[in-house]
Amino acid sequence: MKTLVAVPHHEYPAEVRDHVEDRLQHLVKFYERILSVRAVLAREAEQHRVELVAHVGHGATLVVEARGNLLDKALDEALDRMTRVLKRHKTRLTERHRKGGRIGH
Image (cartoon, rainbow, N blue to C red; front, side, top):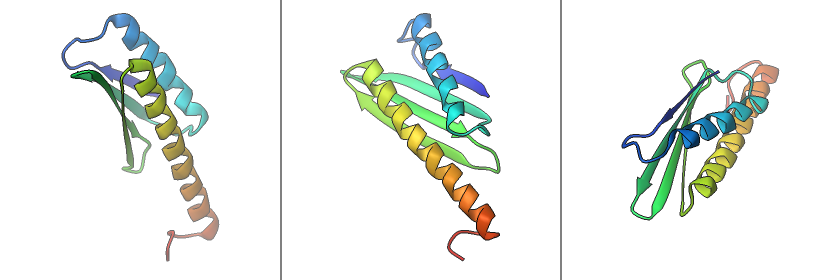
């Protein structure tokens, strides 16, 4: 899985980028077919914004966003949301495979 941590205006030190990359690697536990994950870190006034974009194959792109007063809090919330989205995506794929067709048809 490829990871990319984007910091648009160089607002965070390199240690933060390394920490975020390490945390992103844990997402593979929930869905092993992740092709790449991009994290965008931005500071907006007094809040930190973390956006995670995961490409999981077959043209599917999963996006979550979280905000918080502390970067760690925003990162934790974004990772929790992405974990839920990945689990839901995996469940939908396995159900579709079992039924032999599309969900809802």
